[in-house]
Image (tube, rainbow, N blue to C red):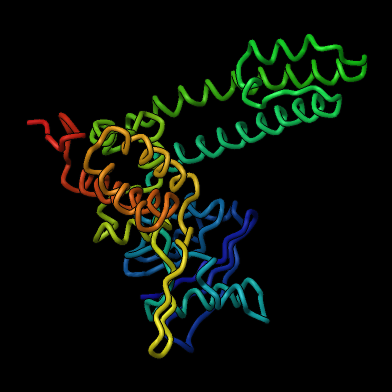
Length: 336
């Protein structure tokens, strides 16, 4: 049996084959020699690789050939990140040694479909951000000419066309026309992505359960499921809340315990979507609305919003864990 540390790059891999803490050897393979590396693996081996852009590709190749594959979180594996002697061989050796004592911080490997939906959502968010920056540019041009203009009016095609009719200079008119063309193209692309997200999200496990929860539509269900992956990976709803980054920071030293703001360590897109869905659900669910109002009276709107989102995520967790389908979510009536 060997513990194998792999330092993966886009052109080659550096591999450390560890038999014991002091008995090891190194080997480098070009990616076009990957079959030679695969032939060196045994069914009793364990392998560790850092989560990089092509880590999934390697995991798919080796997962059936070894006993266990560990995908390492590079942000938490400080031994590699803070090493003063950072070489490919040293990184591979550290991975192998810590794998041997089972002390590597792992990342979850989600399904290819879940990752694909997540990537499409990220692309959509970038396009939305670009569209917003272009709309802000139009607003800034109007303000510079002393014209009063609300940003909200630019969100519609009619409002955008109206601004184009203002008395711009020739240079400004050219700029406005180009910006308008780009905004319209972005809107079309975003619409296509929304359709794709809705389509592919239906294939994710748990989709039919989540869309019966008030506040969750096809796109938001896809985002939440792509972030969660397999709900069985989380022993409790508290662990899922920690994964989403909506649990408070805790500092415990000597006899002093201090709780701070939420960690925000999780996926930002998932956390934002969760809060947005919660705000919709609060309007219709008496249970969530009462909980939100109670916390709001004591701690204000901001903290009440996050507390309600934490409660809402607990419902999502149990819905997926227990395969619930709601007939009437607002009154917590399950379908028979």
